[in-house]
Image (cartoon, rainbow, N blue to C red; front, side, top):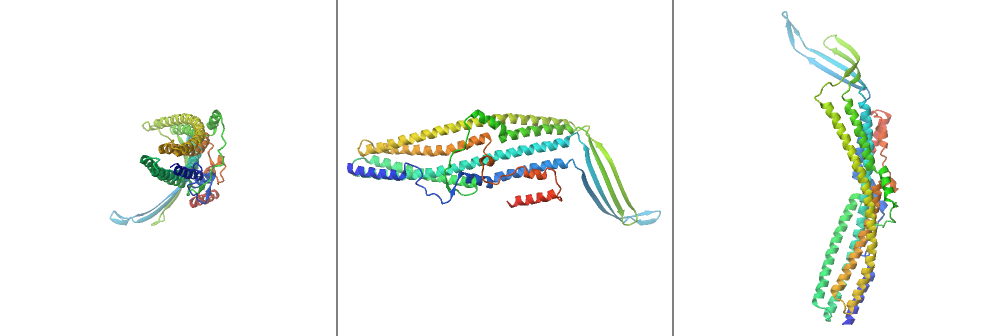
Length: 474
């Protein structure tokens, strides 16, 4: 009886030797090799969310052009062509009223004074552009952190599948050993049933791990823009400071969420100036040239005028005062938002460092747990061959080792995500800060082309046409 048990123990030891105690031997890796930097490049280049918000930034740039154009002369034209018909009788004489006439007018207007409303509109539009740029940077950080999470999730999901496959092979050998020992009378039918139940549970666990891998791969394709290849383990964690207070101070200076909120407050204050200026008079210079002809006669006219017009609102049912109060409430809301963002940024820095410390401790504990669980499993297995342990004891020890290895896989993935989350919390998780080898989007390039509100038929307008065509092709 003991000879058969020893043979089964040797088979189990052989399975353990080939499994390496764990994680990576059970899944054939794809041929292509992708690094974490490759995943980040793919996310930066292919993100539809980033493209959408870059377009929204360009729309905000155009608001500046519109505000600039509002202070420039306006030249417009109007024309009319009319055909009259009828007849009239005067003193018994019947005459026709059929006639054709045409009129063309050219009108020019120039705003001379609006109590600073136009200038405030320009400055508010510029502040909105600056806020939108910072919001784009904040979104870029979120996209890159999501790519890091997707990368690590695929790696850990593959390791879980491999671990489950190794566990399934091991439990298959356990079941064979239990059956052999049952045949020679060393164990009861209960021990065999326990091994069968644990094997079925392992099969279910493998199916779940494979499903999780498919989900992780789908998320990777969504974020990075391509299917995951052989994902290479990152070479190391990003360089981080250890002082939380220093990191908080840095975040308060450079975090895009905070900068965006500051620009929004400035824009809201300028909007108050615009609302107050609406109650002041407007002074406008205007000119008009008109030419008209009557085709049925030699009558025509050519005339023009030039002048200055002053106008304003005396009473509008309280709408102007309401507009000022509304702008002030908007300013107060943005100030409250700035206060909230400041607190959130500081809290996120502290939370990210605390999470990183917890994950590091968890990883160290997992390593120690694996060592202890492996020693315990081998000891229980040897004791079982001598009849001092039951099949259930062996299965429980093997499950403890499996759980310890699974905990280490999760902790390793969490460690990288937590480290890069620290960079996001301090505002340093951008393509520029990470040194990604990608063409960086120049948020100011389009603004530089449109801030002067160029007309379509100009040198600057031709450059804009080329830029827009290039954007449409991407």
